[in-house]
Image (tube, rainbow, N blue to C red):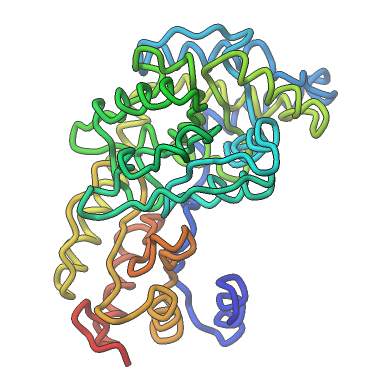
Length: 379
């Protein structure tokens, strides 16, 4: 079967006007102050040399100041923050830094693919923690066998979640820290959707939890909130010993982030809250519009509290791959089948809120015209 990239290329060759809601690729450009900062930094000759392996001192300080403002968590910029070439790079390299072949790694299913592919590349023995809708897509630590927990080295998790858009209460993090301390497991929390939250909801940081920094690290990206996906800037914060291990690996693999991009990222993290409110309002409006439109086609989807995704069940008796294929072939609407995120995603599709309401309305109109509803028969 052709992959999604090949299917999209073939559809475009056939002249189909694709509405691509598959990738988590924000529409539009980075904020103008960020662009202006990058342009100014390009004119500084010293920025064109190799950057420091550990990132510029100024960017690291800005990261820790941002953390203090957002979560009232104080971090040492000289040891507890490390800039990354995007969070995906850091998540995968962390696996290479800390996992030996045969080590047990606990990974959610479904999950953002680097959470399981990074450990797989490192030769880990993966233990899949199946997430279920009846448990609000939260990890159930009680399902992990005792012998597996005792052997486990790392646990990856991600709330607000890609792909399910689930969120976790503070009590969940408290339980996670206690579990990790009991079994001496390194916690890797992906908090890349920390600021895409709606209706007054505020995501929790692992590092807010007493003891969280003792056994964990947390990853962030500039890609989503600041429309900087192509700029490839992220960072990790938390336990200094874990971060030092990742930094040591990276010194042998790359030269760090172009200093110009670090200057631009500093500007992004220092933008006023009005920018954040504008981004949240944009995705909240799209969320409400698409949920209402899908409801008219038979779907009943609870309002998500965060992320830029909807996690939408497929019609009865249709696999996620079959349904995604039907959509692109019959309507030109692209979504991501749930199985792209692991076997636990079967029966769902991830829909990204990366188009304005006019375009989302066009997508809904195409589904209606093709008589694609939640209650439709398989084929």
